[in-house]
Amino acid sequence: MLQANLDLSKAGTLMLVTRTNVLLGASRVFARANFTSQRKLFVKFAGENGIDDGGLTKEFLRLLVKEISQSCLFEGSDEYKMLALDSESEWTCN
Figure 1 (tube, rainbow, N blue to C red):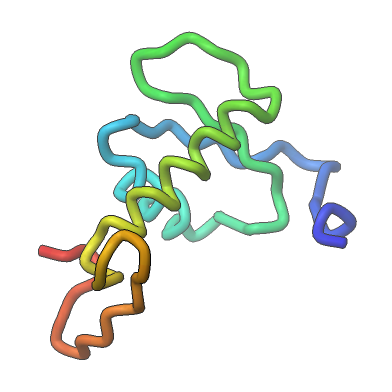
Figure 2: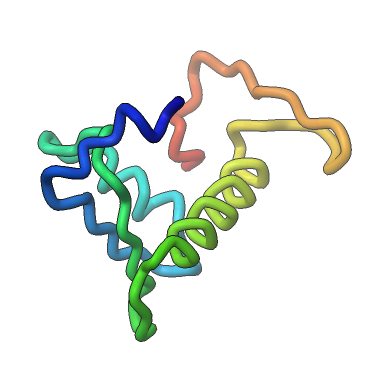
C-alpha cells in the first residue's frame, strides 16, 4: 500500500500554486533538491484561504491531470489521447 511508504514523522511538502498554472508550480516543487515523494503534500492556492486537510491536495491533483492532458505532452481528440513522442520538443511546450 502506498500510504505505508509515506514518511509522516517529518513535515510534509508545502506547495504554493496558482490555479491558472498548476503544472508550472508542480514542476518547480518537484524539481527541488529536497523534494521526496514519500512526504505528504500540503497544497495552498495563491490568493486563497484554506487549510489542506486533503481536499486541496485532491483539487490540485485534479487540476494537474487536466492541465497535463491538455498540454503538448499528449495529442489526439479529447476522447482518445496518446503520448506525443517528439524528441526535439521541450516538456514545457514552448
